[in-house]
Length: 236
Image 1: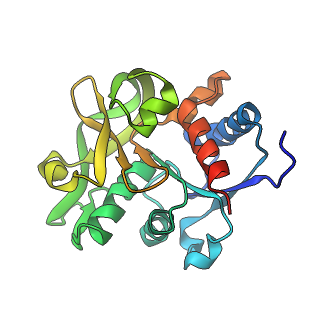
Image 2: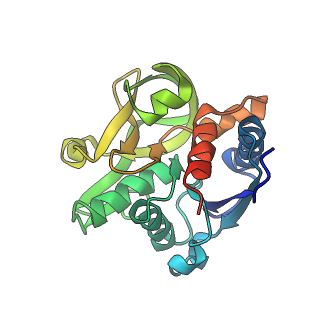
Image 3: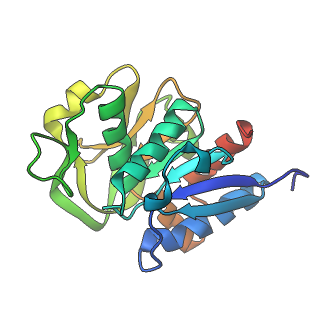
Protein backbone atom coordinates (compact mmCIF):
# COMPACT_ATOMS: atom_id res chain seq x y z
CA UNK A 1 0.00 0.00 0.00
CA UNK A 2 1.20 3.45 -0.85
CA UNK A 3 2.81 5.35 1.99
CA UNK A 4 0.39 8.26 2.14
CA UNK A 5 -2.58 9.36 4.15
CA UNK A 6 -5.81 7.44 3.59
CA UNK A 7 -8.43 8.84 1.28
CA UNK A 8 -11.18 10.61 3.19
CA UNK A 9 -14.64 9.98 1.73
CA UNK A 10 -17.90 11.57 2.84
CA UNK A 11 -20.98 9.33 2.82
CA UNK A 12 -23.87 11.77 2.59
CA UNK A 13 -27.03 10.19 3.95
CA UNK A 14 -28.77 9.18 7.14
CA UNK A 15 -27.12 5.92 8.15
CA UNK A 16 -29.47 3.04 8.84
CA UNK A 17 -28.00 -0.48 9.24
CA UNK A 18 -31.33 -1.96 8.18
CA UNK A 19 -30.78 -0.63 4.64
CA UNK A 20 -29.04 -3.25 2.50
CA UNK A 21 -27.10 -0.68 0.49
CA UNK A 22 -25.78 0.96 3.66
CA UNK A 23 -24.41 -2.38 4.84
CA UNK A 24 -22.82 -2.92 1.44
CA UNK A 25 -21.12 0.47 1.18
CA UNK A 26 -18.47 -0.03 3.87
CA UNK A 27 -17.60 -3.44 2.39
CA UNK A 28 -17.48 -1.98 -1.12
CA UNK A 29 -15.06 0.75 -0.06
CA UNK A 30 -12.86 -1.73 1.79
CA UNK A 31 -12.68 -4.01 -1.25
CA UNK A 32 -12.05 -1.11 -3.62
CA UNK A 33 -9.34 0.25 -1.35
CA UNK A 34 -7.55 -3.08 -1.18
CA UNK A 35 -7.79 -3.57 -4.92
CA UNK A 36 -6.48 -0.09 -5.74
CA UNK A 37 -3.84 0.01 -3.00
CA UNK A 38 -5.31 3.00 -1.17
CA UNK A 39 -6.23 3.27 2.47
CA UNK A 40 -9.72 4.64 2.94
CA UNK A 41 -11.43 6.42 5.79
CA UNK A 42 -15.10 7.15 5.36
CA UNK A 43 -17.46 9.19 7.45
CA UNK A 44 -21.24 9.16 7.45
CA UNK A 45 -22.64 12.70 7.27
CA UNK A 46 -26.27 12.94 8.34
CA UNK A 47 -28.08 15.31 6.02
CA UNK A 48 -29.48 17.41 8.85
CA UNK A 49 -25.94 18.16 10.06
CA UNK A 50 -24.67 19.56 6.74
CA UNK A 51 -25.23 23.25 7.30
CA UNK A 52 -22.42 24.62 5.08
CA UNK A 53 -19.37 23.62 3.04
CA UNK A 54 -17.01 23.76 5.99
CA UNK A 55 -17.91 20.20 6.90
CA UNK A 56 -16.98 18.99 3.41
CA UNK A 57 -13.72 20.79 2.71
CA UNK A 58 -11.40 18.05 3.98
CA UNK A 59 -12.93 15.18 2.02
CA UNK A 60 -11.36 13.75 -1.12
CA UNK A 61 -14.70 12.58 -2.49
CA UNK A 62 -18.43 12.64 -1.85
CA UNK A 63 -20.80 9.70 -2.16
CA UNK A 64 -24.51 10.51 -1.81
CA UNK A 65 -25.99 7.21 -0.74
CA UNK A 66 -29.38 5.47 -0.95
CA UNK A 67 -31.98 5.93 1.75
CA UNK A 68 -34.22 8.82 0.72
CA UNK A 69 -36.29 10.65 1.71
CA UNK A 70 -33.40 12.16 3.64
CA UNK A 71 -33.99 13.92 6.93
CA UNK A 72 -32.86 17.17 5.30
CA UNK A 73 -33.16 17.44 1.52
CA UNK A 74 -31.28 20.75 1.60
CA UNK A 75 -28.29 19.17 3.32
CA UNK A 76 -28.01 16.49 0.64
CA UNK A 77 -28.41 19.00 -2.18
CA UNK A 78 -25.81 21.29 -0.61
CA UNK A 79 -23.25 18.47 -0.47
CA UNK A 80 -23.91 17.55 -4.10
CA UNK A 81 -23.56 21.16 -5.18
CA UNK A 82 -20.26 21.40 -3.29
CA UNK A 83 -18.90 18.33 -5.09
CA UNK A 84 -20.08 19.62 -8.46
CA UNK A 85 -18.76 23.17 -8.10
CA UNK A 86 -15.51 22.26 -6.30
CA UNK A 87 -14.84 19.43 -8.75
CA UNK A 88 -14.54 16.78 -6.07
CA UNK A 89 -15.13 13.22 -7.25
CA UNK A 90 -18.81 12.42 -6.76
CA UNK A 91 -20.80 9.21 -6.79
CA UNK A 92 -24.56 9.17 -6.31
CA UNK A 93 -26.46 5.90 -6.07
CA UNK A 94 -30.24 5.44 -5.96
CA UNK A 95 -31.41 8.38 -3.80
CA UNK A 96 -28.08 10.00 -4.61
CA UNK A 97 -28.94 9.83 -8.32
CA UNK A 98 -32.35 11.38 -7.72
CA UNK A 99 -30.90 14.28 -5.73
CA UNK A 100 -27.99 14.80 -8.15
CA UNK A 101 -30.41 15.48 -11.01
CA UNK A 102 -32.56 17.61 -8.71
CA UNK A 103 -29.55 19.73 -7.67
CA UNK A 104 -28.49 20.17 -11.29
CA UNK A 105 -31.98 21.15 -12.36
CA UNK A 106 -32.32 23.79 -9.68
CA UNK A 107 -28.84 25.29 -9.65
CA UNK A 108 -27.66 24.85 -13.25
CA UNK A 109 -30.87 24.76 -15.28
CA UNK A 110 -32.52 27.40 -13.12
CA UNK A 111 -35.57 25.25 -12.45
CA UNK A 112 -36.22 26.57 -8.96
CA UNK A 113 -39.51 24.71 -8.82
CA UNK A 114 -38.01 21.29 -9.60
CA UNK A 115 -39.27 18.87 -6.97
CA UNK A 116 -38.96 15.30 -5.73
CA UNK A 117 -42.26 13.46 -5.97
CA UNK A 118 -41.58 11.51 -2.80
CA UNK A 119 -41.64 14.68 -0.68
CA UNK A 120 -43.57 17.14 -2.91
CA UNK A 121 -46.00 15.07 -4.99
CA UNK A 122 -48.28 18.03 -5.70
CA UNK A 123 -45.53 20.27 -7.13
CA UNK A 124 -45.97 21.66 -10.64
CA UNK A 125 -42.57 20.39 -11.84
CA UNK A 126 -42.10 16.93 -10.35
CA UNK A 127 -38.69 16.13 -11.83
CA UNK A 128 -38.18 12.95 -9.80
CA UNK A 129 -41.39 10.99 -10.21
CA UNK A 130 -42.70 7.52 -9.35
CA UNK A 131 -41.42 4.89 -11.76
CA UNK A 132 -44.01 3.25 -13.99
CA UNK A 133 -42.88 -0.01 -12.39
CA UNK A 134 -41.14 0.09 -8.99
CA UNK A 135 -37.69 -1.50 -8.99
CA UNK A 136 -37.71 -3.29 -5.64
CA UNK A 137 -35.02 -5.96 -5.25
CA UNK A 138 -34.83 -6.16 -9.04
CA UNK A 139 -31.90 -6.96 -11.34
CA UNK A 140 -31.89 -5.76 -14.95
CA UNK A 141 -29.50 -5.33 -17.86
CA UNK A 142 -28.00 -1.94 -18.65
CA UNK A 143 -26.52 -0.57 -21.83
CA UNK A 144 -23.64 1.80 -21.11
CA UNK A 145 -22.57 4.63 -23.41
CA UNK A 146 -19.28 4.11 -25.23
CA UNK A 147 -16.54 6.39 -23.96
CA UNK A 148 -18.33 7.19 -20.68
CA UNK A 149 -16.69 6.98 -17.27
CA UNK A 150 -19.09 4.25 -16.27
CA UNK A 151 -18.33 2.14 -19.34
CA UNK A 152 -14.63 2.60 -18.63
CA UNK A 153 -15.15 1.44 -15.05
CA UNK A 154 -16.90 -1.77 -16.09
CA UNK A 155 -14.75 -2.39 -19.15
CA UNK A 156 -17.79 -3.29 -21.23
CA UNK A 157 -21.06 -1.79 -22.40
CA UNK A 158 -23.62 -4.33 -21.18
CA UNK A 159 -23.89 -5.05 -17.45
CA UNK A 160 -26.43 -6.31 -14.92
CA UNK A 161 -27.14 -4.43 -11.70
CA UNK A 162 -29.67 -4.40 -8.87
CA UNK A 163 -32.17 -1.85 -7.61
CA UNK A 164 -34.29 -0.97 -4.62
CA UNK A 165 -36.05 2.09 -5.92
CA UNK A 166 -39.45 3.63 -6.64
CA UNK A 167 -38.53 7.00 -8.19
CA UNK A 168 -36.62 8.14 -11.26
CA UNK A 169 -36.36 11.05 -13.71
CA UNK A 170 -39.73 12.14 -15.03
CA UNK A 171 -39.70 11.39 -18.79
CA UNK A 172 -41.60 14.65 -19.42
CA UNK A 173 -38.50 16.64 -18.45
CA UNK A 174 -35.73 14.28 -19.53
CA UNK A 175 -35.04 15.82 -22.95
CA UNK A 176 -34.77 19.35 -21.55
CA UNK A 177 -32.64 18.21 -18.60
CA UNK A 178 -30.06 16.29 -20.57
CA UNK A 179 -27.62 18.04 -22.88
CA UNK A 180 -23.94 18.74 -23.43
CA UNK A 181 -23.11 18.90 -19.70
CA UNK A 182 -25.40 16.37 -18.02
CA UNK A 183 -25.83 13.38 -20.27
CA UNK A 184 -27.30 9.90 -20.17
CA UNK A 185 -24.73 7.11 -19.85
CA UNK A 186 -26.89 4.08 -18.99
CA UNK A 187 -30.33 2.86 -19.99
CA UNK A 188 -32.10 -0.30 -18.95
CA UNK A 189 -33.65 -3.02 -21.08
CA UNK A 190 -36.73 -0.82 -21.66
CA UNK A 191 -34.62 2.20 -22.64
CA UNK A 192 -35.27 4.06 -19.39
CA UNK A 193 -32.63 6.44 -18.01
CA UNK A 194 -30.59 4.80 -15.27
CA UNK A 195 -27.32 6.78 -15.01
CA UNK A 196 -25.94 10.22 -15.83
CA UNK A 197 -22.53 11.92 -15.88
CA UNK A 198 -21.28 15.50 -16.03
CA UNK A 199 -18.93 16.06 -18.98
CA UNK A 200 -17.11 19.07 -17.49
CA UNK A 201 -16.18 17.36 -14.21
CA UNK A 202 -13.30 14.96 -13.37
CA UNK A 203 -15.69 12.34 -11.95
CA UNK A 204 -19.39 12.98 -11.41
CA UNK A 205 -21.45 9.82 -11.88
CA UNK A 206 -24.95 9.10 -10.60
CA UNK A 207 -26.82 5.81 -10.97
CA UNK A 208 -30.36 4.82 -10.10
CA UNK A 209 -29.11 1.27 -9.52
CA UNK A 210 -26.99 0.27 -6.52
CA UNK A 211 -23.57 -0.97 -7.72
CA UNK A 212 -22.35 -1.30 -4.12
CA UNK A 213 -24.47 -4.44 -3.71
CA UNK A 214 -21.82 -6.50 -5.51
CA UNK A 215 -19.67 -6.20 -2.37
CA UNK A 216 -22.14 -8.33 -0.44
CA UNK A 217 -21.12 -11.19 -2.74
CA UNK A 218 -17.42 -10.48 -2.20
CA UNK A 219 -16.95 -8.75 -5.56
CA UNK A 220 -15.25 -5.39 -6.04
CA UNK A 221 -17.90 -3.06 -7.51
CA UNK A 222 -16.25 -1.61 -10.64
CA UNK A 223 -17.87 1.80 -10.28
CA UNK A 224 -16.88 2.11 -6.62
CA UNK A 225 -13.32 1.19 -7.56
CA UNK A 226 -13.34 3.88 -10.27
CA UNK A 227 -14.66 6.41 -7.75
CA UNK A 228 -11.90 5.56 -5.28
CA UNK A 229 -9.26 5.87 -8.00
CA UNK A 230 -10.69 9.26 -8.99
CA UNK A 231 -10.49 10.38 -5.35
CA UNK A 232 -6.84 9.33 -5.24
CA UNK A 233 -6.05 11.13 -8.47
CA UNK A 234 -7.57 14.41 -7.34
CA UNK A 235 -6.73 14.22 -3.64
CA UNK A 236 -6.11 17.49 -1.85
